[in-house]
Length: 467
Image 1 (spheres, rainbow, N blue to C red):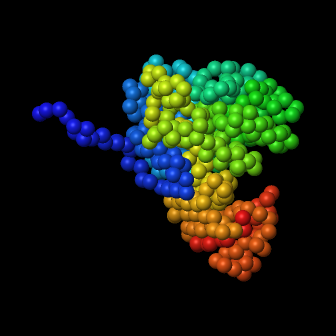
Image 2 (image 1 turned 45 degrees about the horizontal axis):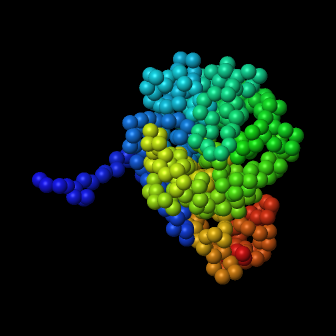
């Protein structure tokens, strides 16, 4: 009886029982809050299916959101069974013609909607789950469905190019990436992945056929969208990210395309412009092209549009839009303005793989072979994290200590790691206080660029590297 008090109602978060598998922490409180927002966005949306948002009358399994976030999700929690189940919903939702709808399970009114980047989740996620967990069943069980999907897309293509349709780079800001470029890039990527999947499954003829198809799509992509100097049609961040991440450019054009990407970021006052399909690629591509400093700069930006803009404005989960709220315009239209929408949290993959430095070797699966490439940056005094792989716990922590960086790593039993450290002077690097030459269990590999490369086996190591 009487007027209820503020503590009269308790909200309970409900989600699938996925076991936590990773942790992240840094010296920056706002970046830590971003990480918390990413995990809580996943926690509140992964309920039998990966919903887009848990609060408004929608709550459907959007395929595009899921495919850009799947690797981040797998770092945070054990999602093997979660995605195995949801992929059954995906194949059940596939149309007779072979298309995947943009959501799964699919309401009748969305059945015939096709959008590149969303439909391609039917190929991308099985491959990613195989890479992370090493279970061939996920690609075996979905192979016929993936083949049917590529057959559908082949019929839709004209001279290996897809038309301008679908969602494109959904909820981007300030610049529009041509939808036909987005669609054709995803077409090429899915065909390339299916070639790899066929190879893993011993389907050599299929693998070779898809590899040839990929070669033709790549050639058509370059002819239609890439100039002689590596500039892409539209000159957008997402255009360059797709072309570089999906390996669609000739080797001689990659460096210039990377420079054009950074020039674009600089032209936007060091801000991102990416929407759903570009955001997960942004920091990983910058790091792969040697621009770790730019990736960190984007991560640390607190003004709109940026990851930390929402954190600065009190967010506790990831927003649907970069401008869900701005000081200039206030709150965006509530008809489409979720404050718990995990997609833009896909930067979590880079936080694990490059800030902490834990990634899987592409040629191996399930972290049997680990890539450890921690990226030191003066914006942080320390970064640490762990990931519990199929083989056991992998951990990495680094900190600034005087004139040195100190890096501590642990590699689980029956695994090995290729470790990339800054600087070419291996003689100045110490492990457990003594030179590398004293350690027969550490193998010095040829340097790559400005990095010393080491091969280490299972165990714990403590390295000291001059700054």
